[in-house]
Amino acid sequence: MKTVAILYGGKSGEHEVSLRSGGAVFSHLDRELYVPLLIAVDHYGVWYLQQNPCFEEDKKTLTIHRNENSIVSVIPGLGLFYNNKKIEVDIVFPVLHGTFGEDGTLQGLLELAGLPYAGSAVLGSALGMDKAMAKQIWIQSDLPVVPFSVVNDKSATHINNSLDLVIEKFGFPLFIKPANAGSSVGVTKANSRDELEWGVKSGFKYDRKLLIEPAIEGREIECSVIGNSEPVSFLPGEVISGDFYDYDSKYIHPESVKLSVPAHLKDNLKKEIKAKAEKAFLAVGAEGFARVDFFIEKETENILINEINTLPGFTEISMFAKLCDVSGLPYKDMLTEIIHLAEARFEIKSKLIFRKE
View (cartoon, rainbow, N blue to C red):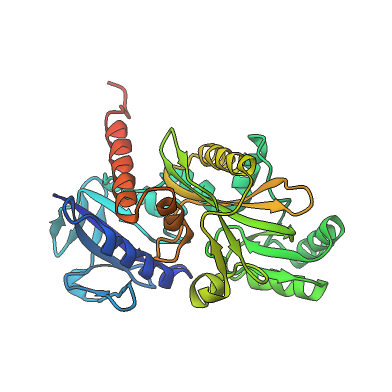
């Protein structure tokens, strides 16, 4: 059997979500094919080999045990080590959401270590994480996106001028989003200039670049995608929330949100969403798996891409797994397919020549 290192926790604001995602992957991994090995990353970014069971069955979550003798080192070209001993790993399955997990930094580290890993590689991860860059690429690919403006943390004068232009362009209400964050961390809604200024100030705690977008009146749709160069999309689902699908709605009070899995959509809309999800996936160089989020405008039924998540939530209540399951791919089989895709990519890349012979 092959050893799968589940890497969870992390430094980002999605640390707690990652503990639950890691728990779901740990509990559903096919034990006839794989042996799970747990590596936790604490809030400071230190990696620890978890040598004792750390899965809380009742809460469906992993915990973190910190021990100086179990600190993991990543050595370029050699792999993973602790106590000067190599950790034998066949593949790494990261569930580190957000910054330092799905933004390409971790993927680059694993590439240097020579380890195969699940999910998008460096470029796809970095582009998928940066909402502004992803949208610019989709526009170049003739894909419709939610309108947006970018505000950078340059100076107070620059910011004020940018906000004046945004208000003139979009009006209210507006959403303020850190360009590089997930699970709606740092996202606020503004109905006035004061709320906009507060939202921008709050957003800059999480990133130096923000997106400001007009609120779209319509339906919020999500679509799971699995594959490498030939991705396959699954039946779309719908998020039905009172205001907007923020962090608390996703993970703290999920009872406040209704998920329609699959979404009740006309056949032509389902087909269009699935096709756009696959095209968006390929355009940013995503691999392995991702979730693409859309809005369907109420009046026109126009489909707009909101964002892509190259490392979506893997918890029991996460939409990604639910959409795969309702489309005929149960959680355990989904994990196996994702691992096979990672192995296939690693095998192809290992045959490439990186220096002149």
